[in-house]
Length: 303
Image (cartoon, rainbow, N blue to C red):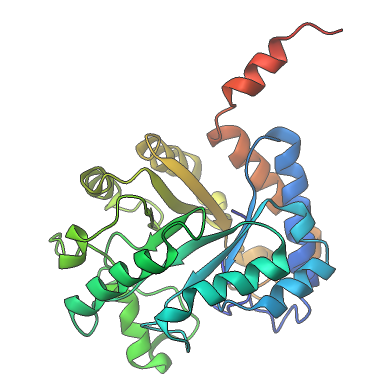
């Protein structure tokens, strides 16, 4: 998956790229480089939030959707979005009509901020509305955010209670105990769980994923982290821990030294778009297994 929530200021400062032309060039270059090394991979456009067909029309005009195989959406109607949960099928249909590609729900969630029962309702209702409607749903998320950590947002406490909902999105509390929604988790859903650099929760998360019976996991590797000392060791450790699952790997976050401003959500300067493409290709070669079919084809004699 190439980037995350590009129409959300928390992940792409579109004030610095108002027509998303820089974003489009970034994704086209990265897609081409990944295709060159792993042509059998499914490429997914980073999940959009809000769910906006007009944004996809704009990206289509820039040639972005021609470079990917799937589009993805994120929805949190009980916490952050201004639409009712019953609108999920309508939201999916609107995106399908514009994109002409299969749609994945790469983040759907409900917090337990107000009550555990609200999260259970959100999970069960989302499953009822999306079951059989889309190829994949990844529930956000497995683990609550530890209270001493900062949520990834540009707005922090100016969001009011919306900010604190970030801390209660998991099925597992920060103290390591499961919430009621854990027992209600539908087996066909995947999980979206982000890990921080050298995250101490990694091994415990894998144990919980096994207990849930999850087969599909969405996570991410940070382009910004790629420049840290020990980055490859951490990436290897994270991906080795998740090797038993089918992983959708999201690549995003701008190294602060390469951006139009020093922030992970700033668009990178145009001369560094190729660096992101190189990171994407390196990641694909290092962590995406070559399919057996492609391996067998490579062994066929030249005619």
